[in-house]
Image (tube, rainbow, N blue to C red; front, side, top):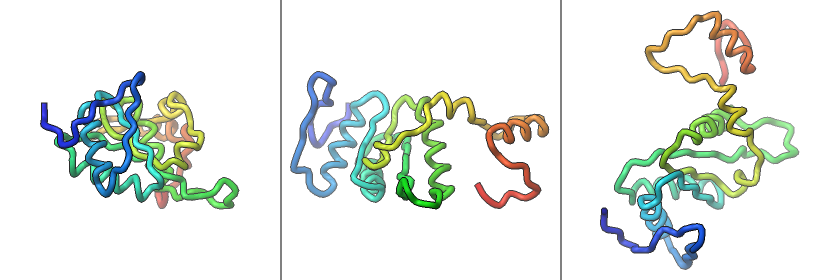
Length: 161
């Protein structure tokens, strides 16, 4: 058992923990110690993506152990915008949704605006995921058919996500 700087017990569902007046990085220090005591995925809801990035970095600084980090970024578009979110953001969100069901312990950071958005159910993501690892062998024609079924376009040269 490691020695904690802020000895506050991990809250249970019956006894919620209310803490105030945490200034500077003291919020992240408290979160790092709570996460160390918690067995499971810890969800940290932040004001915006910049706040989520800062909290994530501070928790990693204060933490004595390595955590799996899941970032669920904001789409950075408004519901009535005529353009789609950036492809990197969509890729990161899909990666996060695909990996969360397998997380035994870790940290999920996301902005409050993202928490309020509807997302695809986990079974939908799992049914449409293709996991490739180094050393795997696949029939190229079957792989192509699987990718087309998942919504990819068959092109001679890949130029986008």
